[in-house]
Length: 256
Length: 307
Ligand SMILES: Nc1ncnc2c1ncn2[C@@H]1O[C@H](COP(=O)(O)OP(=O)(O)OP(=O)(O)O)[C@@H](O)[C@H]1O
Ligand SMILES: [Mg+2]
Image 1 (cartoon, each protein chain N blue to C red):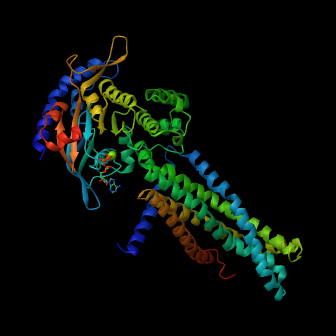
Image 2: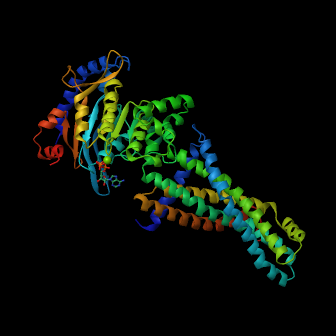
Image 3: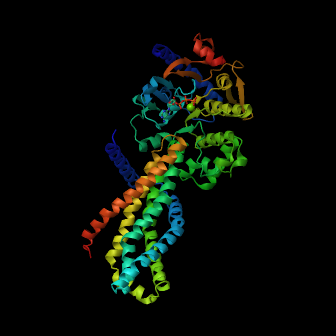
């Protein structure tokens, strides 16, 4: 089988998995506890790394753009530029990539070890559908928490940017934040929240599918984990490009 | 090859069935309700010409057999001959490449995962490796099926404690699987499989690696299920003393209401256990323990004696 056919098959398998997870989502028993546990693990658990990456990304953006803007005498636009980059691109993409590394790998490894230790078989033998019990709660938790984490990253990034511009460049705090407020539109924020929903589906479905299709013992678990992280990261970045274009068209903000 | 032998076997099975019913029903009148004779004629498990390959090697090749209601089928065979695979086919964890699988007369071969769930509710499976959920405690593992079915917590706890007492592990109720020894893990697996009183039970080497008394307890459990609860089962094992226990003893309830085990020959009884041996994907033997010990096949002889 060549690579093209294999990847197409994988895309098909992954989409079927998502379809199966969501189709029976509201049929009893509903695994609410599982969803909350996963939301806690995925969402709350990722908060620290999101805070750190968000803050320093905002900081470095200011660090790099302020001197350039100052050269053109437009340094009072720093807040606007930093916030725009964060809300539209860096917030969603960086959060998604961090979560791929932290959450995607954990999901693939956990499901993968459950496959090789026959726990998935045991679950099926006991009359539970692993897709509903394991995949669906993870997907739901990701879809709910990733946008929230993205918003946190955006906000903390802007704060980081503000801190650098005041602390390092002596710009008044108010002028930074007022340029943020005046520059950012609702469309930017809408777009910035739609993206993580799609990314969450990508990360969750790729990680679950790779995990559940693990073969070949513990070595296989390592393989699926790596491949889950790599595949999901690439897909997130590729999807980001097409989403950006689609959002420009849909929200009617070409180029701006 | 073995098809004529099998047919004879099945006729014999049917003949024995009638006598056997009376014995086991008399032994346990209180524990199960009368079942119509028609229903008993339907095998609990039936394979028809089942073939399954991994890669280009056929692990199972045209396998046909029946396990009648209330019967225990011991499966013998060298390592890697496809015993665990056979058991997984019954549960639909694997699907055959060719042939049909029937559970209680229902053709489950083409069932999807969702329909299969209903069938699996009636089947308990003891995995060779235990396969405990390692993120759940012993209690949660054993109560898994009850929790899934939404059984109230106090009821579930009672049932779990009863099952754990059965396998001698009540003390370990709050432990995590990682804290257990191999044999303890297997016993938790047994308790988990038997919760909810399934009518069909698959034992995949339940006594491997256990000390003789514990292994004996597990065999007694299988005998009790067979004779007192009318459970149909498949029992994979490599231990010849397990075969001996299962084919020479039966369980009955004495006047004091205690379960006792009687040796064959003490009273007239017919023990509802058959033996089946697999080699290279084929059934090379199917019959009773007497037939097995009398066989002339050099491979089987060597298998039984180990040399
Ligand atoms: N998922 C799989 N992929 C490829 N081959 C497999 C798979 N599962 C089992 N096999 C092969 O099928 C054969 C039968 O395996 P099975 O586990 O049924 O053996 P077994 O009779 O239970 O052996 P044992 O007594 O050692 O438990 C083995 O040769 C094994 O290599
Ligand atoms: Mg096996």
